[in-house]
Image (cartoon, rainbow, N blue to C red; front, side, top):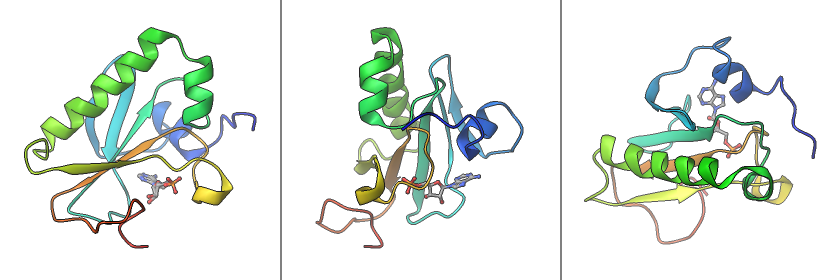
Length: 122
Ligand code: AMP
């Protein structure tokens, strides 16, 4: 799938739409999900134009891949869930119901999550 520069997360990155920022560095922006499913529900997005995890991993330089992963860990610490626990979800494509076509991971935490490896509401 080609990257759509008008997707909502691209617009957040350009500052055209506000977000409740949690963290930002050269590689990533993290902000609260607008429709939180858990006490902690933060989205972390890379700054480059990648649709999905496979697109990101195929096209991004190693520095960007590493920088993004470090940012996800930093977000877990900043949100105070590094000790209590958290779940990372990255929906990619139609079968995973990916809504926004800019690669992102969800950081869920703040309460006990069900045992299944899917979104908390499913
Ligand atoms: P996904 O199904 O993984 O693509 O999830 C997209 C997520 O983006 C959903 O959890 C939405 O609630 C969230 N979302 C959509 N628009 C915004 C926005 N403007 N600010 C923050 N989160 C958003």
